[in-house]
Image 1: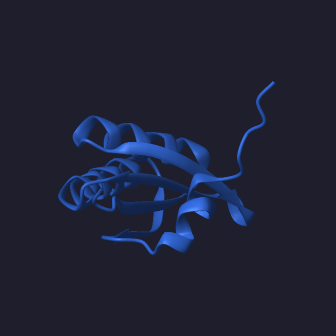
Image 2: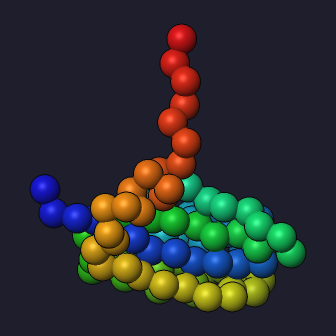
Length: 96
């Protein structure tokens, strides 16, 4: 199985992050993996998919978020190292 690219868009505030995530998912064939909220109300949205799709999604998400707020940074990693898979996916949820 080919590795999926990882795309990140970091915004200030949750509303901009939601706007970015919405545009990313509507524009390209990507999967919304998660979002992270850190100090200073920075929110990073993470998506996965084929490299070209992730690149298109990040561009669309950046544009959408910038219309209503502040975008700090964006990045695409074409083939993340296997060691990043668990941290990206987050903690496993317990099942009954």
